[in-house]
Length: 114
Length: 110
Image 1 (tube, each protein chain N blue to C red):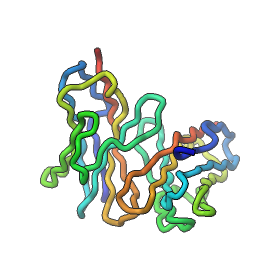
Image 2: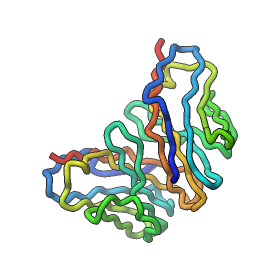
Image 3: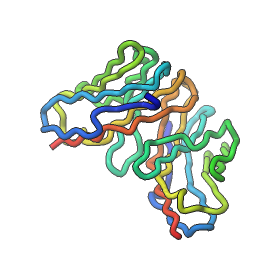
Image 4: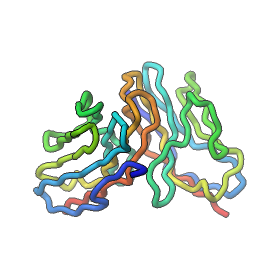
């Protein structure tokens, strides 16, 4: 595809359920980032991948959150035992290599926990 | 601590008026600063970065290290400039991780 693709676009889940969010970065991009945007707030960094490794997980809010990346491509962000405060738009971005290069963003997954 | 502050949630101007979207940052080293823009129903995209020192769509931004600011300016606003604008900072860790401000909605009225 031409850009970063995220699925699903929208997800409504019941409190306590697990959810998986998927990100397909631009082909060949080695760096991949997850951000979270709560209503009316800016983007918060969650985790960063260089290849399949995650050197910086400092933004993951709790141990209910985890992420992995395989084949230096697709990444999944998993939230276990979802809580209402997890409701947000989850954005994925990729860049050609790490460092201060342009990040290309996906359209986001809007997660609503009811 | 690394922080980016955009003091205005909403900036409303008339077409043809000058625009200045404010951004202040807190960072102890030498950051790289960016402006990202999100037009209605589109994804977030890079508008400009301070190291490029270029004008994009008539917008410019100058890094002022003394005032720790990176305000975005345009002399004559157009209706198509209406969007959400985010200022972001990347630190010297060289990971590309971005710290974002809360964003400013620019509304350009006809």
